[in-house]
Length: 226
Image (cartoon, rainbow, N blue to C red; front, side, top):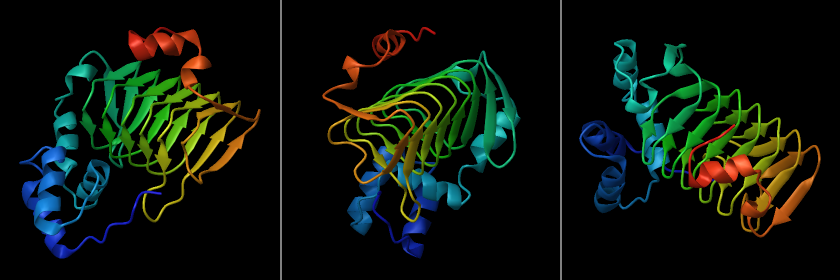
């Protein structure tokens, strides 16, 4: 469970003033320096959404201004701060996405990607290391989650799930559970006290590299191949 933060009016005002000015890493440092609170980048992004600070990004999408990695994709705004994307999506390292995603294809994220909302992937998904996902992660295919990633709510995949060490679930005030329609492969030192259901059982492994399919090994070290 991610630690609960007491959001004071002074802290909220500071986020309102500096959210557009500072990158999240710098904003985290400034909050710690001025308020003595260590808040993760994911929680800052989550709070910024609650304060209405990310609506401008959605307005830019409405005006047809898309991130470079979505230039060739067809993107729809689907209300409630949600975008729907047709085709496979590869999100570069350190990108920040302040909305929910519905991906009609496969998803690959690199390291330190922050996604404020939830994700629904129609294909397979590879979530890179040190990612942050603010809400639920639902995958209709197979799922790989890299080390030290935070999932704000629950994880649900129809296929097998491969979880590296250090993965944590559950935003403050919300539960976090994991369900797989197949087998869950998990490294030691991951998921904590997360409630787990796996239709074909749980296997604890030294490294998920020992068991993930070749297509995912390729994706982790090169281009994704279906």
